[in-house]
Length: 390
Image (tube, rainbow, N blue to C red):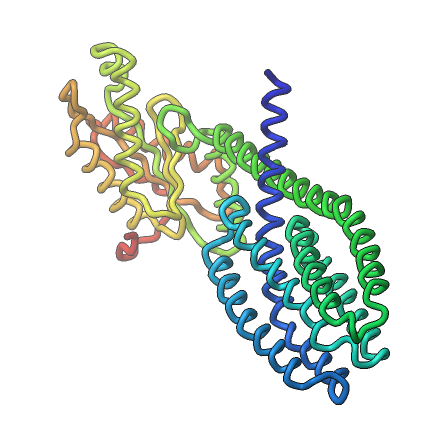
């Protein structure tokens, strides 16, 4: 079973590699075809004064019309993301026609001058060699290119045997060259595709590792019941707030939030309802905070909110919104009104995390002594500005 899964996994990446190789081939072929007119210029330059001009013009015109159609088809494929299964028949037809058109050059330019004949053969060999690099990620297309060029070159030479003494020797020489080239294409292409497959595999492994690390980090820093940060993550965030606050001379305020009569809820309705109460309060708190605020479950029925760039007066407004939100949205099934007591403490320079937490916790204790469902403010700070928290 494991071997089957491994083989399927390997086959999947091989298919992806072929797909990527096919797409790269299409894009490279498109760029290669854009410089095709340079070959026409070279042929005209070499053939001018030797080969009949009308044949050269006819060949160029036929090639030009075909090239426009080919580029149009390739451009549409690139825009819609080519698929190796659906689009390869069209591509094989295109490259066969492309090779066939180049091979027709022999009919228009060969048999008039021995030096020109040598240049034409060199051009045909060079075109095959240059296109090899473009076709290396999709070798099947290269075979069709060579077939189209060989077919039209053979037909062209056969039609000019009356004026071309080296016709059969030329065909035989090109054939040997093409066979030799085809022999080395497959192993080179396999290595290139294997490289693409390994790249895709490494990319997939890196993505899976990143996802796993994120999941582990999330689990390590998140309270499973409420989805808020846990105590460990809170301690780290609080230390960061203190360091940044003292370094940049900014303030932040801590809210310690405790559910009133939580033990009574558990004893009356059971721990399942108690868990729902914790989740309900956590959601009410989180809805009243900004994106930059930090909210965590401190332990048991206690929560902590860190409010950056917020003084005591501003924090009291936030705390009151949280208190009202919890009180005004009763727990359903059972219909139970939940209240909370909140302690507010603003960090001062030189104040440790433990001292800040204790100051807020002392205020929670005081709020409960004074009747619960209220806010108590620590005297750690003397700021009293208009509220700006939104």
